[in-house]
Image (cartoon, rainbow, N blue to C red):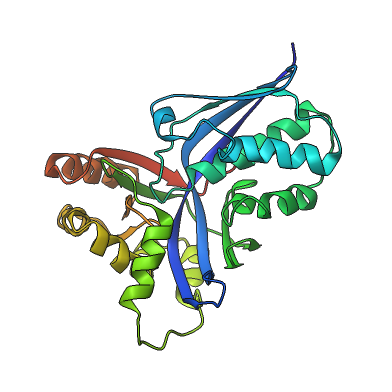
Length: 296
């Protein structure tokens, strides 16, 4: 029986600039998406109807009903293509849930890729990206991975060059954070403050293109970090532990609570991971590299 397998990476945001709240409650973003070598694996094969199952260490944190992004992705693709949504899909979850790493978005992107192949649709990247944008702001990026500037809600993408492999250490928290909760706290913190339109800035783009980890570290910026730390004050301890362990720089990833620390190279990454683990300020420490690509 034909089985399609694809791997989809987690992402971090070396820069995340958040604009003022719009009338509809959403925010315009300007961000750098950077996929890293932490993967969920999606397997799809023929079925009499659509079933999506979760396995792996983080399966328990994923909803099993129709709100599951992987299920929604399969149904959205079938509807657009005019075919029955029939597949048996298994997602092996190695990306932590509600962690600021876009694990759910990665799963949706993996399902789009896998079901496109399973159903022999031959959809173009543009067609898949159109479906992806209806599912979530991070899903279009997860279709390909790599590194890209995202604007709008994050769905408008421009791929950018990274001049070297970057070595990161992820400090994973013991429990997740709700992205809507972090946005609400951000709006509270900004109440009465004039908020500029979001912008990535040239410093991070130059640093990435030049392959200079020190310059990348100096350019790390996340407008959501203050709100995430306000909701989880213990993240301040994690960020401090990373600095004291010798990280070139550290940042809350996306809406958190995962913290991402940049190392000079592979050897430094191992040393940094050991020191962070020994600090007791996080539940798990993971060494990853970027940029990574979907399907790698």
